[in-house]
Length: 241
Image 1 (cartoon, rainbow, N blue to C red):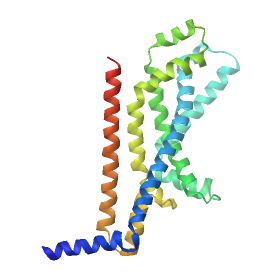
Image 2 (spheres, one colour):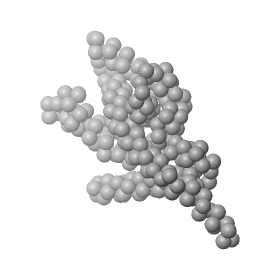
Image 3 (tube, rainbow, N blue to C red):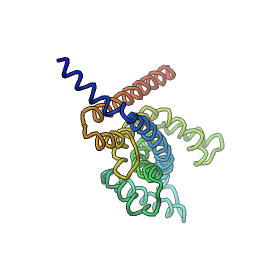
Image 4 (spheres, rainbow, N blue to C red):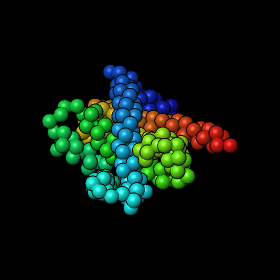
């Protein structure tokens, strides 16, 4: 038994302490969090735009006329194509297409990752936000109109803020899902957490400590953010009382 633990310690020392290989894990954590936060920001921006177009189409298309009706129909069609393509193809294929085809001339691997995951996340965020907008009481829109607001002002100042309050937990959960999805960023050269473990594995020819360490770090981060989401949900429920 003692020899077993000595072997584990020697393997741990080789994997992390020798030549300061633990720095690969620390750098991977930092890059993973940066990639996740920036991708979510891009995803939320795309999601708001797409959700606004689609919800406007659902609510206003039948009452519109002229060029605005045509432009709205075209915009809604483009959004539906985007949602279908992004949600119907693997994120792995998407990031490879962006890195090796669309942005083949760029050396900024992190930027490629942010764009790829942001576009992917935007499709799911758009449906979350759209569901929140459609769930707001129609009376709120009528109240905005009675105050003299136009449709865009009513959406921006009244409907969207209320929708965001109801969908914040879902957006936070999307962040957690995105955090785990970024594990494939290493395939295009981003030194994320998983790639850091693979570098150590390639140098030391050991798999146990690097892979279990990465799994433990992901689990800790997911548990922490899940706790934050739970606390946020409880606070929102208390604010409604």
